[in-house]
Image 1 (cartoon, rainbow, N blue to C red):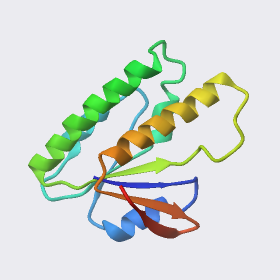
Image 2 (tube, rainbow, N blue to C red):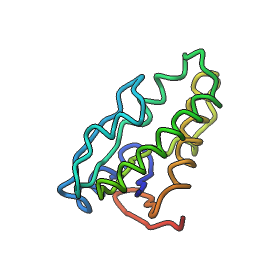
Image 3 (spheres, helix red, strand yellow):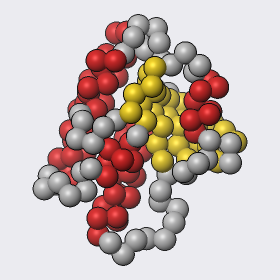
Image 4 (tube, one colour):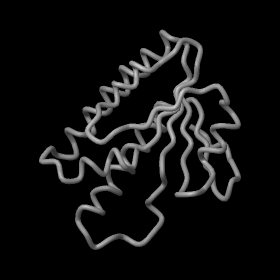
Length: 143
């Protein structure tokens, strides 16, 4: 799995397109389980998963606690990684970095930043390669 992380408009999509021109792209929909990406995997074809911030935004008003939400996406991620190994598919996640700004006053916006930070940490933990993208410049980070 590879993770491309950076701010909005940083050039993450272009970096992914340049490195994986034949990839299948899958946008996570609000309320969708991460494991549903397995259904669009093609053998020997990279799969780009994006739309994470909007996907997480849908969970802000959920009655489900952050810990159970995180446990569910971790389980789904394990299933997704197993399927990718079986299909010889490289998983690529595009994740927005939102933690470098002013801490919002709204509780829901602080929760969104927490969820995004935890999601990013979980992606990085399972990644073979992490790329930080800023101003169109792509830098490899250690994992």
